[in-house]
Image (cartoon, rainbow, N blue to C red):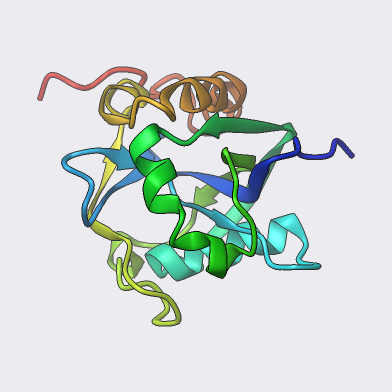
Length: 178
């Protein structure tokens, strides 16, 4: 097993797709139209797959999802300068100061109905997202935070064929004209 890089907060990222091959994305409450996929920290001693399912449930309320694939390596990004300043308040909570985050990414197939999605999550954590949408890969990459875009591009490069193999030739790589 590959170890995460030093100096980065360890977490999991979740690429959730539906039966149409679209990717779940949500906008942060303070996100200014920036959309992202669910992600979060790993608790001490927690299995990474368990962490991915827990984070998905905490942030979206979704429990109807099956793990399809896991990236065999970690993907990292550095905090922007403004996040680094705000990050100081997290030092007490996280127990350390980090230069960015690193995630082990999981591909999950959504097996439920859209009504299951609840941005209040499971009620154990504060709400992080304001709106959600199923997006094409192109839409997600166009609306992602600049610091995360290279990570998302790599995630889509790795997971695109899995999604294609499951949903068929109609994978929405680009935004539809309708």
